[in-house]
Amino acid sequence: MRAAYIEETGTPDAIKVGDLPTPQPGPGQVLVRVRAAALNPIDLYIRSGLVAMPLAFPYVIASDFAGTIDKVGEGVKSHRAGDRVWGSNQGLLGRPGVASEYAVVDEEWLHPTPALLPDVDAAAMAMVGITAHLGLFRTGKLQKGETVYVPGGSGGVGSMVVQMAKAAGARVATSAGHPDRVELCRKLGADLALDYKTDDIPARLREFAPDGIDVWYETQRDPNLEVTVPLLRKRGRMILMAGRAAKPPLPLGSFYPRDCSLLGFAVFNSTAEEQRPCAFDMNRWIEEGRLKPLVGRAFPLEAAAEAHRFLEANTLHAAGSLTGKVVLTVD
Image (tube, rainbow, N blue to C red):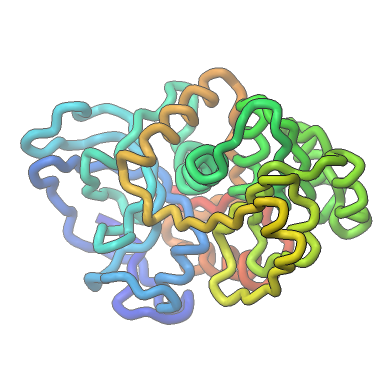
């Protein structure tokens, strides 16, 4: 099978595309004919060696996938050959990656693909959607009628947060860095969409939510807590899921007297069982027309290194040329 893989960690130039043996499913596993594999920042960190994960070389890159089941292993009960499926959290913690024509996946990580959802879109929504859902509902305990703010509402996670919070009955504010992206945020359902390059974000948020923000879903890698914490409501919750090297000062005087919370999580710490309710809601909202994945750029499998460079430029170096997700298509 064709696959994008590395034989050692390093720059995007370490990625090779070539033939590897087609794996076979064991007990409780299925063999998926992959049609699309989405890239995430964690894929950059693993490939570069910044995040230490158990890797067996050659290591196939990518965590998110969508495709069709080709074979099922012994004991598989909930899926059969021919089923369209999507999933996430592959290529992590010793599991093989999915940027390949075929991938073996444990049954518990599979979710059915809605009939009208293209595989590219299904892969694109996988990790970012699960991340948004875990942060809003499991970690942030979002309730109907509460107010949410998420910076970067046209990005992978941010666009999912906007749509999911609206689906749950919240008031949603967000921001983006270009008028076209601000308009996209409005189309996704944001009640307030701001341009962070021209708008006074704190002032506009105080107008929008005079009592403060209930759930601040922080997507930026270097948040300014001195600005953001005072904008929280009493018992407000800030969700942190990025910024490995960040060391922002914490204004304790405006934090603990109002019973505020800083809540961090990493999606790869969640179990397949914890992710299942996320996938159920995501599929339901897709079928209801309330959730739309954003595919920003699609690359063929053969251009996997170029795709990593493009995502790295936008994730780590603020190139600003990406709206939505980067996806590899596997023909």
